[in-house]
Length: 143
Image (cartoon, rainbow, N blue to C red; front, side, top):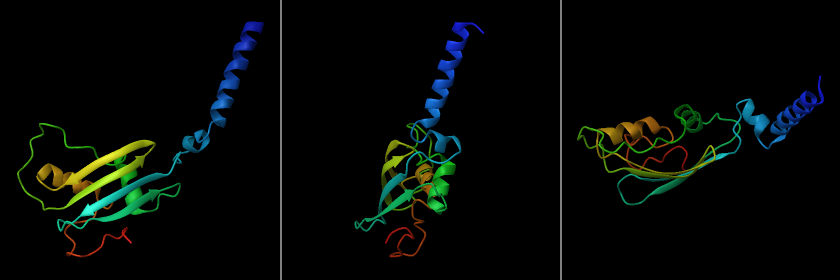
C-alpha cells in the first residue's frame, strides 16, 4: 500500500469510528429513538372546557399511543389545501398537539368539521380520544 492509500484508509476508519461514538448514533442504528418524544394534547369535547394530557414515548414503545404514532410516522399533518372532502360534520371536538416528535417540533390542530378531518382524527386514535365515548368520560391518558 502506498502512503496515500494508508492515509485515506486511516481517515475513513477514524470517521466511521467517530460516527459510532456520536450521541445516539448507536442507539438509532438499532432502531431505538434518539430522544424521547413528548406531546401535549389539549382536548375539548365541545363544552369549552379542555382537558390536557401528555404523551411521552421513550425507548420502550409499549404504550398504544406511542406505537400507533410510530406506525404513522408521527402526528398527521393538515389535510392538503383544496382536498375534496365530504361535508359530513363529525362533531364539535377539537384537539391541539404541541411538542416534539423525532426531534421535530409539532403544532397540529385536529377538528371534526368534515369527512377528511374526521378520518384524520380517527387515524390518530388512540393518541386522540375517541369522541364516540360517553360525554364526560376521560381519555385513558388524562389523569
